[in-house]
Image (cartoon, rainbow, N blue to C red):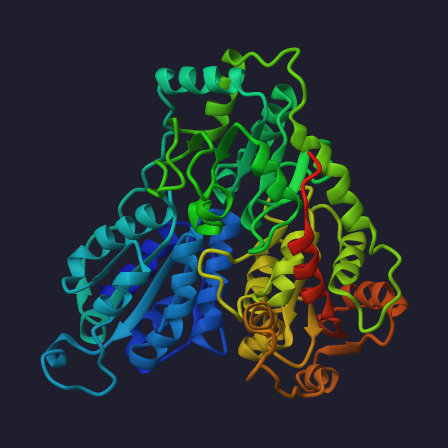
Length: 548
């Protein structure tokens, strides 16, 4: 190899980390990096907006556990990247953002497109830095990946000034260190086992940390053997199969729901891989009186409603297995909460044959679940449909329903679906979005067509910002500023070389979805949805009384 510059070295370090894709936009200040990528085994995926690139990297990280990489130029490119970077950081997805920058020779003066990007990215990353000495590149890249991928994962940012990118550099990428598992202390395991043995009505609350730790199998066995019901957060779906008799499905709606009753009765919550950002403990433990055991890869976040009796910190599967050996629940009655399962299930099944049109969200999601296989992936955007997806779309396996619920950024579904299809080309992928979220990153459908990621975008069409309308009605009794018009989504899809469908009756939805999934191009389904269900749900929630 001839003389290397800093950009070449950066790309060699990315190759050394096992990077498959870089998502991003070309710009003047990242020309040297693009030139180095041209001669690399890494595939550069040109996106139509930097936010799309960051969301793709975010989802790649969440699905693989390996950092997703996004690249932008300086200034407006970097500000566009920020939303997706923040999403990865708050959702616990490993991501490395790389930005171009002006030369170090003009940072001290007011300069075209110059912003202090290290200062700007500081609040949305675990760590970030600027490369100012070419010889430091390999250390910086290794540190970036180590921090991004270690628990709790998140985003890091590397800023590369254009004059530094062109400078010669010598050396090699650093060798990767293999991460050894760490194990919880015997004392914490013993204390947890005693508390679990004594509890009459324990509950397991499982979050995204259990998915990141690949603890689904251990958790399912633990719940089964200990005979303890399991509730998951929006981001903890599929850790236990939804058909399991102890699965009480999802909590996290802002209003009372059947699972709220379980928290009224419990005398011990066993929080497994639960990230407090997903659903504040103040919602389910407002007075801080419920005893809690925290089982996670890292210590619990501080919250006055979440003060654990004991923290079991280490490899989650190992901790569950060790507690199971010591805890004695033989002959103990099943906790009351299991009785809720029939109510939860009945609520879900009551929409199975609903013929109303526009389609009720519950029915649309019920039918979507019938078509999707256990390994297939849905990615939810943010809006009213997200609440219904969280409540009604149930999973057999982890990471098969992706919901952003740390940062909860609109516009994530379609870029996210591109990444999901790149990671799992053999699975069906459906991006579920509202018409609001769709119009935020719909340009990435061209990227999907160009890179050959064929997925279905299902639009819940209500002609407005339905979630905000729901909140306004709950708070003020009417709504304002939430209505808008839409393009003809079928023509829109066709104009991009995609296939478009419109659903005109309940009976059409399943056949339309099946046809859309079989196409060799990305497809868009426009489906009118009846969001009158939002307020009906709020009224029912207000009247909910616990039978237990």
